[in-house]
Amino acid sequence: MHNNLLGRVLMGLAACAVAFFVILGVVAVLPRALQDALPDNVLGGAAVVLAVAAARRFARRAR
Image 1 (cartoon, rainbow, N blue to C red):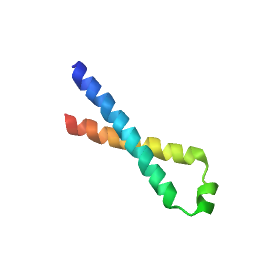
Image 2: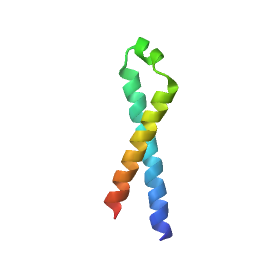
Image 3: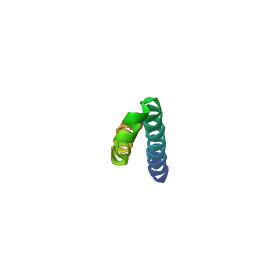
């Protein structure tokens, strides 16, 4: 049981890291004017949404 919880935590952390790098990649290809216009909260929110979606997908697959 402990191993399963640890696996879920690690999957959640990995999902957060992947979401962070995906968001950074998307922002990097945007034009500079659009990058400056986007508030930091939008980028952070997008990373959280992607991380939660990925974590839920991995958690369902493990069952």
